[in-house]
Image (cartoon, rainbow, N blue to C red; front, side):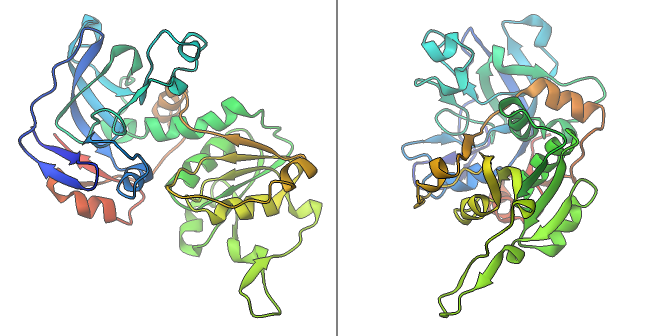
Length: 327
């Protein structure tokens, strides 16, 4: 079968991989659409050292074989993390943090292939009437909805999303549903226009000031009214956390959504002194994501689709989302 395979150092398009054989607890899925995520790009930079296999984790597909006969022929999306089922994390509803978990496209074969296998309990049926082109957004939207699963958002407060890219757009739509006074901060005026139906927008440069010593730019001091109770860092860059620390109110909350290969220096005293809560946020709930997509309460630009052999173009695309069409 056709697949995009990561050999530990680089990705390569192949047509000689065998169709995977499902285990009893798994389903065999024919992939229809698969989207490229920023995490996939980070894998090429060393985000998952030691991983070798088929890349990709955002997909919609058709179940071909399954121990659950009711799923055969159904359109499905799927969660990323398969736990061992026996450890404390799995027994307490934290399967995605199982120390022995298998993660599609990161520690086990993923969805950038014509076929894939996935633990049946991780599958979610696509609602009738929801097209594959929209259902393929379920996984990243679920990740955005995890913010409101982890943090009780006071709708009478204010919040900021740092980042004017794909992740920021999904987080902004998720937060807009709470009624919170929302501002999106980014570097690109043209991208920020897309956020205007959901939030106020600001350029990141409005929060910086030139150094009088000619040493570049630093962050200007803000009043409490200029700061935010909740700050979602979704820029995908180390500098996003610096901005988050500058604009969050004392006793406020920073939610970290960015994942990137790199290290960050931080003055740790600022967190306890200002009593800042920092929340790491990753995968989220699929069922509400599918429901919101089916009901049209969130919407995203069309995916720019490529043939798998043109994966370099897809990875380099500047479109809101790029992906692969296996139909």
